[in-house]
Length: 249
Image (cartoon, rainbow, N blue to C red; front, top):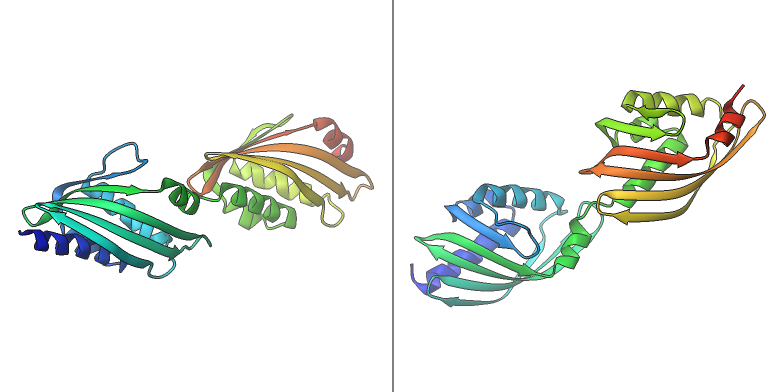
């Protein structure tokens, strides 16, 4: 292929991706094609590229706005400057600029080198773990146990002082039993939070009037560990004495 044909191949590849014509785009890649992305720890194979693109396109709400700013072609290499602007299903908006080097061999794209600002990508594509943890609290506090349980992995666990580790069934039974003891809806306040990777720590305070005539007040430090977009484990640190006094016989 000549230089102009290589340029057209590279431009069409990206146009196919952003118009959700993924199968046609993948046909333009060599079977042993690879892609390196700035900030990524490894080079991807064609199978990896397909998996990544399928996931990325699933995060966009509708068709993203894609603009080719400029191209430079020499021999079998094509450098593309482009911009992407896309609303996302998680409510965020992803905007970024790219410079991608494509190497063509035998009429197929053999290698891709993608350079971009990784900060907007991380901010847009990273799961909102804090939002998920707070949503979990909201569902438990409002009595929506089905909703809360849907946010847990099948093998999720909860550790709490005095009780040890509970499985998912035990978590539901614990919350269900506690809710039957409240007189009305308990007061629940978030005091602070810390997020690092897939770990979320939340400081909170609970106040509730109980059907036994007592009042329960306590502070908690909850540690959430996420697996994907689901909660894998919760560790609850609190003073067990107020609970024993309020909920005890």
